[in-house]
Length: 161
Image (cartoon, rainbow, N blue to C red; front, side, top):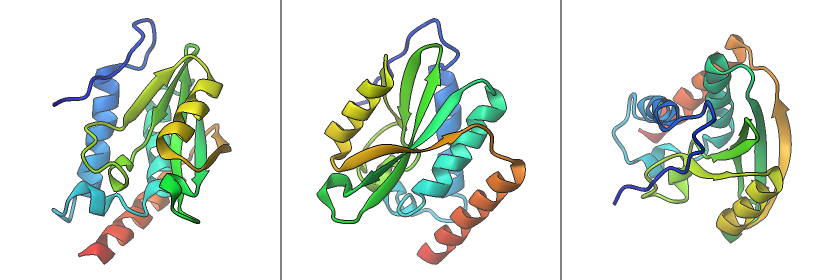
């Protein structure tokens, strides 16, 4: 069954935009390897989150994007995870570009849409467990940084083969 997206109609963020970003994520993860996404997404959350932020900011430079870092995710001691909180027109979106490493049958990287940062953090702690905080506010990511993140992801994927 297809999961639905939640969207407010007066914002720039659309289902089409998120699907395009998700397609780029999947295409990159599966570029040289046909293993399942839950295998390919593992241990790529930091670099993939920053790469996705770069792609989003390139298309919508006025977005406010923060990296949320979780510790002891899903009750696994010392298991960390990075995801994105995206603010646009007073709406907040939780984006998990490597969601499949924890929720292997998830259909999309958009986890939720909320009306406040506090609601996003509450939702994140309810779903992912552990302790969460904003670890970095992303104002800009250079093309060089994005290329470096993509290179690291590809190296990680090469080790899976």
